Image (cartoon, rainbow, N blue to C red):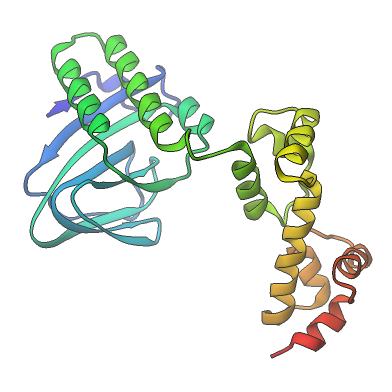
Length: 263
């Protein structure tokens, strides 16, 4: 097992002074149960090598077997425990790397499948960390390991359009601007508008409107809040403007829609 001995670089309460600091790399043949309701002070990568375990990360539970793992950012609540007699794991913790994590729009946590490339690169990083006396060389190697891994997991499958759609689905209730949305994919507003229309056939703001109206329909059918509150929940601060947009999209007022679809 490798553990960073430069304790002055392991202060998680302040910005990491290097691109990335590898805190620990290790493996456990008999992994004990962990319960961290306040999260861990380092970013955490762990996967199962033998047996099975029940993992809970920020409220989401999942059963993982050999070749399956999870990642969570520092301070994200998580817990795991064995399921059966044998439970072996491999893990790596680090500080920093926010530039890479944000570039790939990495959420607070995600589950992943282990590849031979990840195992080989982790073996090489572990060997380098145990043999190198320079924290700078460990930092450079660790940052390269992180980029290669994230690129293999996220780059092939996540398009800018998918990132934009996910952002709109999460933040539809907020007063979004094109500049804010463009920041998520490192595009200025003009490039964003041109790209999204060419790729999706509609404008970004039209997509946002469709999402808001779809959410409004759900609230009107299943929630007990007032029509004005539904408008606010869907990003429309003006009740009259909400009513206007809703009628243009559905041919009905919000009240008419609710009365027709009420359970």
